[in-house]
Length: 181
Image 1 (cartoon, rainbow, N blue to C red):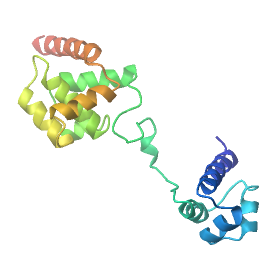
Image 2 (cartoon, rainbow, N blue to C red; image 1 turned 90 degrees about the vertical axis):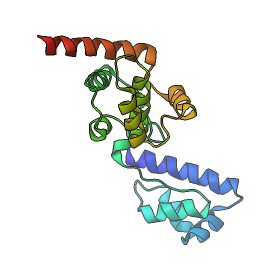
Image 3 (cartoon, rainbow, N blue to C red; image 1 turned 120 degrees about the vertical axis):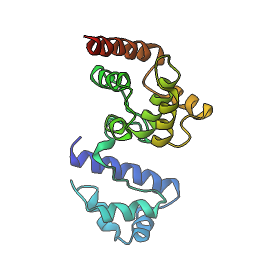
């Protein structure tokens, strides 16, 4: 999306918010500390400083947010990846097959809450150190091993245990075969 389209869309949304609370452009601009003419000119521009947008948003009781780039590809709350493609799925399965419990290794792949739920899921599968994985889950996200929290994780997670656990099991077999050779 171009800068001008982004600014125009933002101003349309803010104008709608101003109308929703009963403000004319003159009242909205005054409350934001601007002249009505400045607001009018802003609608024809391709760029604007953040302070002006922030003042316009605050005047109607909303906010303009700036989010870090690493939230791209994450759910709005930042707790889950929006998708788990084959590459990420393979890296997650490799990590799970290693019985690795270093939190830094886990959080390097995906957000804390998502990885905590993955650890809880893995703790329930045969062949894994249940207590170590539940301890890891709690270190990644306190409360993650609570049944209601894990149930919520299951509802929202892009990873399905019925698909993922057999992949981890296959990775475990391959790892053990390499070590035995």
